[in-house]
Image (cartoon, rainbow over all chains, first blue to last red; front, side, top):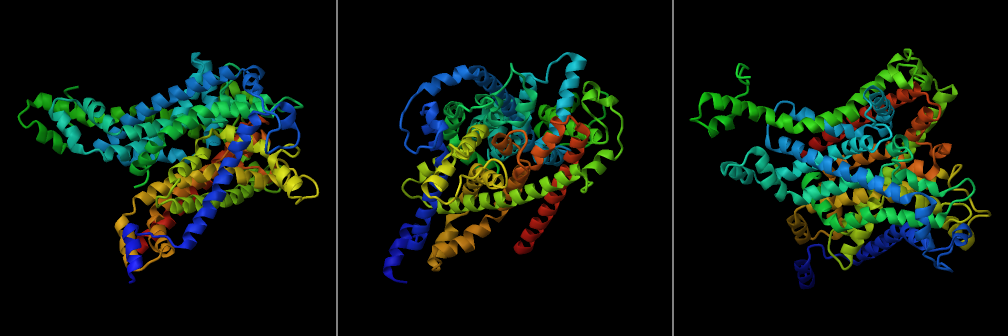
Length: 292
Length: 331
């Protein structure tokens, strides 16, 4: 082997040839364009006056205005929808994460009858089409309400209950993998020091698995924040979430596209910001938990 | 409770931990140890039962009933319909069955292309970004944006871009490139299939990318180093090492993508509203519409049960097929 390539190889085992570099450049450039196109449209259109978004599309906005960002709160009660989404997604995340921590701890650290049945059942609920249990759940909530007076249908509680089960299977699955990677010696040592099983969980395993827990929390929040199907059936005017409320910017004849884009951007910020800040955890969480 | 028979499975660890403890303490400790995992699982189990399993059973029961809006308050009193709902939905000569069948084929075609493209783009991007280069971190962040954006915000933006008169797409292909005689419609008619596919791929590929990146991290570097020393080029390394190593990841990834895409409701719902054009009438939207527009839950449930059966069979066959293929190559 010639000396030159030896040097290159020792620097990087995948010293890429030109064909690789060129295809990488072309592919990644095109892909970046595809990914960012809607983001550009969203941002630029949210700063245009209404007549500009109603006429021919302009790549470069001819007039800029921040008025849509003030109007969005008046055209529809966006602040209320925002609050509803925040309460529903926040509560669903907290409950989902805590419940998943307990379940994953049981599966990771104990052997018991029905363990396999539990994991398989919980995971297989992921494959059910939402539409399959939307109708019966609708009936159950309506009937529970009629029988006991506990309003689940149309209430935030009903939505929280529903959403937290959506993220639960994946969260449990991911945390099992994460807890498995925490050495058993650590919690055994804690137990010798006098911690109970729950003490060992919260003093040793949970702190060691923070990246996985953060990843699971981000996932649970995103799931609840973005859900459309159940929100469209199970909410009323008072409990409407952003997923449904955003459709309020279109009237019979007209759509306020600049306001739609401004509102889309505003409601995306909490999740996109949180996700991008914590993406490192999500990738490591996936590596440890889901992909093994 | 002390009269309860001791659990049959004597746990090794219990015996080891307290060899000298009094029998009474030992027994209650053993009981607690046995029941603790079940207590920990209880909240998860109860919720999964309430929101997934019981509704599923009720859904199956309802599919044998004639449940219209008159019986909503007390669904148990709805008259039994026998197999009427099912015979209605699978009578492919009648309008209901015909529409269901066409929606089913549309969904199959859509799923095939969407999953294929998501997998292809996600895998290619992950492989191209396996090695570090300048700007890789920023690119990775950018690529995760479609995954992080709430579905409705992203899809509503695409709906704006696909508007006939003021959208970006027609501005480019009609006004700027002059490819069409008149601006085409994208959200109604035949084109809506393409629209749905583009939006779905845009939304879906970053998940494949994320999983693939995680999968690539688990391939030991030494294998590449050894291959490079043997004179294998990059393309060869990708074909001989990377792709085969990703097989177990692929098995799960493709299944998950398939189930999500086949059941997708959000994308067509935000894109087209409550009634999708027939070229983009995915099965979830179809069932939703037949249930909540016509308030005929019996027929809707029968369709849902058939959908579940189909997904179960496909998943079972897929897992059987891919697992057998994998163990055969391992041997």
